[in-house]
Length: 182
Length: 182
DNA sequence: TAGCACATGTAATAAGTTACATGATTTT
DNA sequence: AAAATCATGTAACTTATTACATGTGCTA
Image (cartoon, rainbow over all chains, first blue to last red; front, side, top):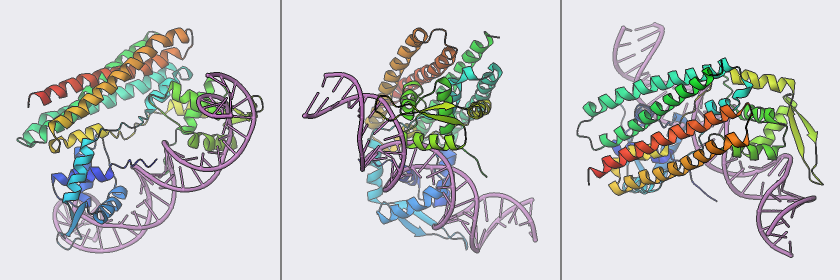
């Protein structure tokens, strides 16, 4: 079976559909915009861009900023087509690896205070996530008023909000079940 | 920096704390019990067990079943200690890679019907998850009455339930926002 | 002038899946 | 007799992060 699973190329195509960019800019924009649910490192980006040029999915242009080397990539028709094809295919879901649940599964081997510590920590992390997402939800419409992407960007933020709120409730419920035992 | 990130070893230690098992049994039990949030393949398990024996974390015993080769692994004191240390450390959360959100982020480049298809599909997957989790939640207490692990196993199931329900609501809300545009 | 942001790239390492290779026993 | 399950293991490949290597320009 020859299942191709790299969505690095498609991620870069998607980002370049927003605007032409350098590898460095791509990295920055990726972590700013989709960093909550996706990531790409330089070690992936630069080799991928090279391959994409070879395959005719993108074009490079030398655009030094001052004396600084800089290569700006933009989509070709083939790249745009490839992106559209990929968008039309169903999303694969990855094997979720959840270390918190893994540890909790072995909870009977832990001291109750350790279990509580895991849950409290998770609650706190979710709280931080929630605050971050709420800020984004509030500010995005101002920053991108009229942008056809706004609606979809908000969709992704609300996914995070829905998830974080539900998991907070789960944390509280689980902590309560730990209290009952004391 | 020398951050060790393999929790395969710890997963196997945890499973072996439930009962001594062969590599083959470990694989089976892992996918049955924690398969919804964790996975280990043979390609990981067998080499890991070898290393664990070398490090003195587990002991092997030849226990052929009939004429069939079979090696049963059990925890040593060192293995038990290592497991406890790991359980006491905070859970690291992984870089979530969510391809659905990645595609939705580029939603303005898709036909609305394609976006809807993604959401509908996700809704259906969540529905299947939900049914699976509900069955587990119902049957686990019967199958493992009195087991000190039960409480924690239910905790992990309820995590899945909470998440799936929240994401279903998010799907509905998102689909509604797509309708408004028609 | 030191430090940070900009900028590109490779090498080493880690982590994991899938396919291959082999063989016995049990079930249909 | 064939197919499924039990059983162990290795090899090839894929994916991804981190560290290294190098250099420019701007700002405090």
